Image (tube, rainbow, N blue to C red; front, side, top):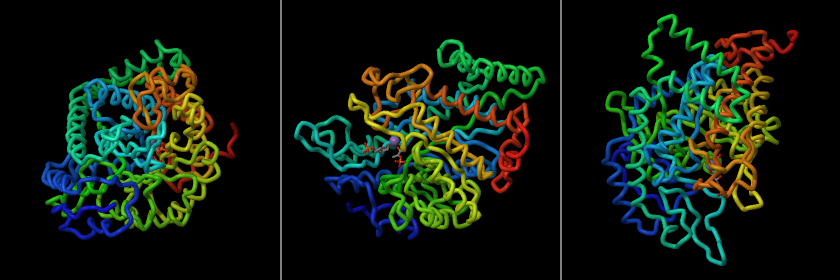
Length: 484
Ligand SMILES: O=C[C@H](O)[C@H](O)COP(=O)(O)O
Ligand SMILES: C=C(OP(=O)(O)O)C(=O)O
Ligand SMILES: [Mn+2]
């Protein structure tokens, strides 16, 4: 499809516009180019949604993760919806991220960098351009930024006015996130109380009582020592989404007046999807031209040479944390395919964050026709990811999950088991199936158990940052030979 040369801001810099000359996959066929032009022009003149310095802060945090001194938790909807921007739904998503992060921080003994798939995750790449039902063929749903989910010709026609609604919805979401995280709602003691409720009140929670007790004790210790409570009261949460619609992303590129650096200010971290990461394609060129921290999804067929070239293109200066490589191989392939990529990236001297997306390689269609994922498969892919890093002595830097704060029935399994027959009960996603609140907590506690088991294996009973070593310090390999 054609893309429109129109963003005055980014036109100033040819490297930001270079993508327009390249093949650009997964863009909508906007039926009315004039309407698109008008919308993009309004967005080019609008205030940015985030600030360059915030992107730099996230880059610093991810740099720590890349060096083995932190852990990334990235999660949220597969596809946000404009109707879903209620205070309650945003608060629920934030709460589940904070709850998971509290457990992981204790277990890993390092700061957990919290990044939502939120405040901008409105555009979807699709396997098929069209969908057919009962003999009627319409364009596929491509996210609320493009068209509507309803199966009517009207809803499925791409409408550029949606881009402005997405911008407004993202602004409202960010506003709420900032208020909730700075205003005391995210107080760690309160978050831990919610975790206690999960442990006490759900069948899934019971097995985690001991871990919750340990966290209780740690918090009591902090209180008893009279340590500053301000650090407990507030927290940082960053916003991320897939940089798919390049016209929209370009319209929100701004140059920092102090540093002259360009940022895509639709979100803090932007990632490139599995379907749009070709080296000579527009998405990679666009991302190369902005200073945000970047993610790239890597599926099971990612070639070692391509990953090397992606690193060269997107992280030429080898800045720790500039790149988060998100492996989504599937439980059956992660152990086989990931090692060569990790080794190649290490040999390149790049300090990337390696994250595991255990969702997108494990999707299946249930007998009822719903797209679903098995909790056990999700867990197994994460386990495989950790095993690979343990064997190589590299840092398993984080997890990237599709989740929601609601009690939906979209993924099957988990300790509070969702059965295949339950899927129609609350199947609410606009695109891919998400872990519900209980399954998300279950996952966080399972990862925490993995960290605890590692500590026992290494003979370190208490959490300590040294469990996780910088890339190149092969702590797991070094200890593998020791008894126990
Ligand atoms: O979220 C990701 C993709 O949009 C999704 O997995 C593609 O799904 P599809 O195969 O139904 O198009
Ligand atoms: C489209 C997605 O993933 P991938 O590019 O890995 O398929 C996604 O994260 O929703
Ligand atoms: Mn998805």
